[in-house]
Image (cartoon, rainbow, N blue to C red; front, side, top):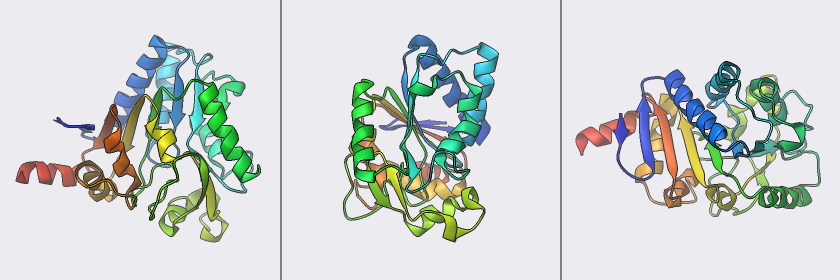
Amino acid sequence: MSFVRSPRITVFPDTGTAAAVVAARIAGALQQNPSLVIGLATGRTPVALYAELARVTAARRLDWSSATTFNLDEFLGVPPEHPGSYRQFMEGHLFRHVNLRPERINFLVGTAPAEEECRRYERAIAAAGGIDLQILGIGTNGHIGFNEPGLSLQSRTHRVELKPETRQSNVMLFGGDLSNVPAEALSMGMATILQARSVILLANGESKASCVAQVVNGPLTTSLPASFLQLHHDVDIILDAAAALELEREHRSG
């Protein structure tokens, strides 16, 4: 099911189907442009996508060797080799399954001096020519990357204090103990994300349904950072049926 509006919204019956469609789009973009610059997300949402990308890569013998990646965020104070780091998440779910060159994998380093690390990351994105295709998930509070709701949003890569619900959603990366989840992180800013040439936002599960409906139909507000995707000219929001429940209710009632 599709809703004709901007951003473009497509609903699939289940998470696996949605992941397969997005993986096919990434594979096609990579075949068309071997030097593709891809922005990547972490968290539970893209796990099925990365599994499908690994499968498609093996089946089609996709060549990632000229591609470049930038991940959205990383925990402050957590080294890349830490099992709870987003770097290790990406190694396990995607990087070890594709032939990306190590020097083309770009990641925020949580143990580096924060302000200089943020500036370095912005310079690296600019040097790569910007991000061609940015993959996003969405938190239940409307955050993308680690851009948390607040009175204002940071435009560029920055240090951020994590909301309690964001820390709770990452607790399994740290042995199920909330006290071990860092209180701060580094994240691409909203302007950096919005400068990507194309954006795909994935959402699944009923817990995201209300938030997704607000992103699509609500006002631009810093209390829902993902709402700023309404400003982008090329956004696809890919949902499973559960995440689309509120939109479908509005569609039927309208």
